[in-house]
Image (cartoon, rainbow over all chains, first blue to last red; front, top):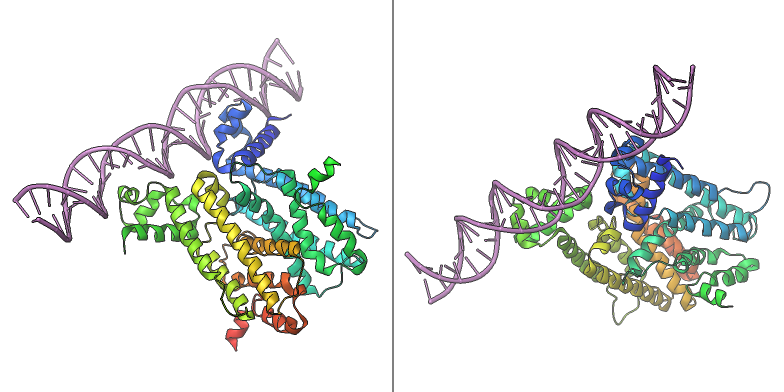
Amino acid sequence: MKTRDKIILASLDLFNERGERNVTTNHIAAHLNISPGNLYYHFRSKTDIIYEIFLQYQLLVDHYLQLPQGRQLTLEDKIYYLESVFDGLWSYRFFHRDLEHYLDSDERLRRDYREFTMRCLRTIREILSRLQDAGILCRVEDGHMKSMALNVWLVVTSWLSFLKTSQGDDGQEITRDMLRQGVYQVITMEIPYLTDEYRDRVLSLQQKYLPGSLDRMSAI
Amino acid sequence: MKTRDKIILASLDLFNERGERNVTTNHIAAHLNISPGNLYYHFRSKTDIIYEIFLQYQLLVDHYLQLPQGRQLTLEDKIYYLESVFDGLWSYRFFHRDLEHYLDSDERLRRDYREFTMRCLRTIREILSRLQDAGILCRVEDGHMKSMALNVWLVVTSWLSFLKTSQGDDGQEITRDMLRQGVYQVITMEIPYLTDEYRDRVLSLQQKYLPGSLDRMSAI
DNA sequence: GACTCCCTAGAGTATATACTCTAAAAATAC
DNA sequence: GTATTTTTAGAGTATATACTCTAGGGAGTC
């Protein structure tokens, strides 16, 4: 693997693990057993490393959120979207932690992240719209759907921060189980809009994302 | 005003304005025309200043979220809660920016903030429950209400961060108008649960929180 | 006036941190 | 094999930053 890629990977790991604020470029170099000079040969600044990580994050999410062409959306699609996006957020979890700071100090990132947000919001709306086409959700007025999509985005992007700030009492780690509860929360928002045909199916699906249900399942 | 209080106020101002990460204790002292030694006579560390600010924030929010005794909740109460809480968030907006970092580096804060979150969530549930008693919202199952309350919390606490990260393109400031849209977003979540009696009233109330509606109102 | 207590000044420090510079090794091209 | 380019090491630096330490001012009390 190329040194440049190793730097990106190691940085992501360390940022996620210890928080970007607590990880210096010297730490990253030391972690990889390379010299600081070497690191700075590949990246002009720490900011550049963060930007590069964002580009990868963006690619991943865009990949996850691709819409199938030529067929209707299914419930399985919807669940896949939710699970993958939460997985993506987890893999790049340091990023949303001090996002405002990164945007303040990097103009490219500010511009790109803004476009990324808008793209995601459009896609969420498109997903909701196609769930209506598929008879899974009821039709709603356009302005209302925009607002719903935004709420979905807010819940999704703040879920990890909520977990970290509300559960991290005794150094307790965030489990996959807790991460999955994010899916539960998003489904909650959409329940009132489910068609009669799908309501029961979704409600029972939702239960699988309750904390603890994973244990129960694996216990079977 | 006592020097100690001046330090807290100046810190809050500077943190909100420039981001806590970019504000050093020396900056704070310089801003107040006092010596660093003087600042450290009143606070043992920067962390202590942040903790003290949190205590004030907490007091403010707890004050806003008091429930009236001996009478039912009204729609006006509900709106008051939303408006004041967003105002509070605005006044202490630096705090949610790198909250995870503060909790990582201060055990007291971690414990207190966790209790604060739980207290707020309980209050949100209580508010929802009393809106049901008042015939404004429909009755829903208990688990579902818990989940709804959590979504409200997530939307409220992440609203400012969304504004900052999605709008701050050309150094554009966040306006009161944009802040108010947070109220719109929360109402969106509750629309499906409105009783027939109240639906129309709330829907027209909600329109006042659309971006731009303030301008239109003041133009009349 | 002397004593006490709270408050303040301001120079100073240890450490961290992002980043630079030079020289040389390693890879690649011809 | 030689020339050229890419990559690497590692010592070094300028600056920032949280915090310390000592000396003393000012106000109230006896």
